[in-house]
Length: 293
Image 1 (cartoon, rainbow, N blue to C red):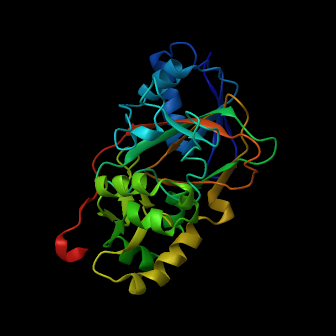
Image 2 (cartoon, helix red, strand yellow):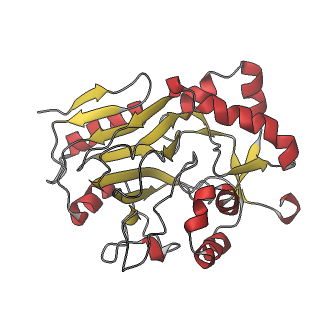
Image 3 (tube, one colour):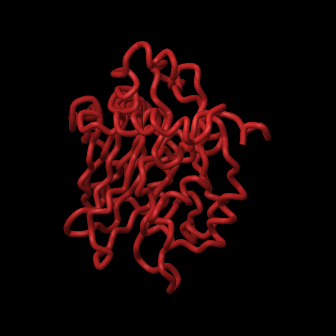
């Protein structure tokens, strides 16, 4: 029986049913899932009872998984492909990822090998809140004026983990030494402001509030006005999907044409516990030249 695809909002988001990810998935079903993901940008599978090995098997349907060597302190102790996003204590210590993702971003855009896809699997969720938002960067680009699109098509922008950590108030809870090590491993890169999706051929804005610092060749002051306009434009309600979690949800989005946000709409007196997997993507961008820094 083929999978069923139910759109969840106009232009972004769909629920996939009719498949048990806890069992091997045949080639035809894999192809249908991938097409639904490309069409809807973010897909959710409800009620999937997936131990870590099955989560990893699902992720590998889409490509090679990141083993998170750059952030070993956030990895699952037995499965390095799984990154822990939790406000539970780990090894008796306060979690360093309890407030992660609180600014709009695309995973690893601050590297020259940004990720293709991100998957989040829900283990525990607060009784209220704990939602995740995803926005459609195809539509953000396509609804700009032709004149502005022509300007943006020619620009690169600086993406920086150091910028993200310095301007994200939720990073204040993290170990400064861990942040220093992460920044050393991820120097700033230049990414195209408009990225052509390698599978669909569509153009998408490739900037984010969290990780884009300025346009290459311009100062932060010169860049600020246009960047702020683009940040606000890209997260208009009609471009976004907000996911209300249930335990055993598997949510997956395309980092090449979306940004996402963990909404701080819950109390840390309750528990939010997720497993994250990221699929490696194709090279994009370049390291900055010394004169561009």
